[in-house]
Image (spheres, rainbow, N blue to C red):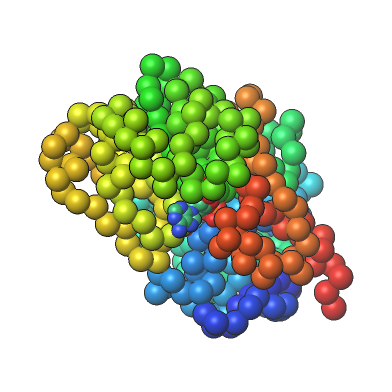
Length: 351
Ligand code: NAP
Ligand code: ZN
Ligand code: ZN
């Protein structure tokens, strides 16, 4: 059994701390990966602190994984030992239901197996995430990485990247559209890069005016301080699409009032307290509120290949794993530009 070390939390109040465990040997269609980098998603913080009420402890977070294949099962066709592989939020699904057959494994009718805090379909153990030195996964749930991209900047694509790429594609964001993005964090800054790359007119909403220059550099055509009521009003009834990637409780009303007739606001943020809205803001413009969750395996590969062609990666601050608790606190203070990524070689200094 591959022995693993990582950082785990033992309950919702405790900081992350060194933790040892074992993973199973890779089966015929599975690969074992030595993790090089793992991004720090706000979902890791929600889960470490059981803010969604579904956490299982001890909990090793991490689902933005890039690593090197160390072993490949006899039936593996996509990878050879020594190659780079990437793993995201899902590591298994039923593979039989209609969404799975369509390659929309994230909507599996039997429920997905998440990268951590989920029951493993193969051996019934609880999955342990990427804040660790290795992972074992079926090749269907691992992706190839374009060779031209910086690997630390690739890691966040596996969650922040696909979670924003997918809805922007689904709602056909492109030239001639005015698109609003709410929250300039890990997800938000990837949404900004993609929406700009897809050719839309992009307006970034933020509560942090200090991020204005960055937003313009990342591709925003306009930046609006969302607490400035007059600045918000100036955009009333003008958006074709708005994507909300906010991690804390807030009202959707300020943004719904900015949608054109028949337009959609899609939510990807998952705050502990649910967002609120006033139905008047929907009925007076026949607007829709929608949601979106990561993406299926084919679309995740499509997104990575798109990033390779357009040279898109996340803006990252690389940290040693010993700084993970500090990184969580800084994320809560909106003090991250724009994704922390753990350099997993820092685990080597652990006994
Ligand atoms: P993040 O890096 O912490 O960014 C969140 C952003 O939300 C902040 O940068 C900030 O933007 C804004 N914000 C924070 N507190 C706020 C407040 N009190 N009022 C208004 N705005 C506030 O988080 P992330 O990793 O991008 O994740 C964002 C959310 O998406 C999380 O809830 C996460 O769990 C969820 N998520 C969902 C999916 C999915 O599949 N749907 C996948 C991954 C993550 P400004 O400073 O610009 O205001
Ligand atoms: Zn995530
Ligand atoms: Zn399924």
